[in-house]
Length: 227
Image 1 (spheres, one colour):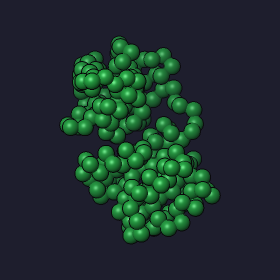
Image 2 (image 1 turned 60 degrees about the vertical axis):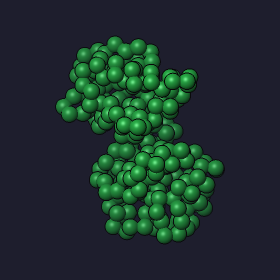
Image 3 (image 1 turned 30 degrees about the horizontal axis):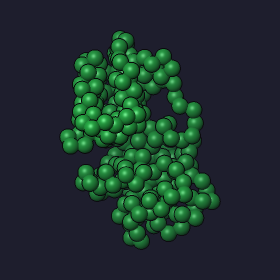
Image 4 (image 1 turned 45 degrees about the vertical axis):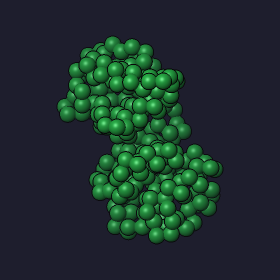
């Protein structure tokens, strides 16, 4: 399905993640160090890079910054650095997702699937179905339609854009400023507060607040699991 590079110095973790990804049909190339990574990216043209941050021969953030100067290769950071400042750094560098150790390999494979669906270069899916705590959410992109537990949900244009933006980044914490500039295409003084209002309205209309998690001091995260 996809060619994936994984850079991780812990042999057991790297092999476990590789095994799960291969079960999903992916081709996986392993790197225990950063050495040789840049040349391999140029020659092999992978679809996705899973990158540890703390490596024996260098800093994963710095490596990703250098990679970003030459390619838009999707990057998932896989690290024990859990501080919010580290997450922000990862996204500012251009990471597409950030998963903190320890984690289940299944969670990582779901994140890989989401990133490839969003950024892998194929046609965007026109519909998707998600589950959370026994509820179902279905997104019909072409029709600008949302179905929650089979019932149609009427959203404003802004609410639709914000929900779709978050759904396309499942499990990723997105700051309010990014939601404004990347989904609503504007940024005015104090306007980040409008995101809170829009999300409050979307939660009320869905009838199940758990789809959209507030990460205090940063932003929001869509919690649905793809079906």
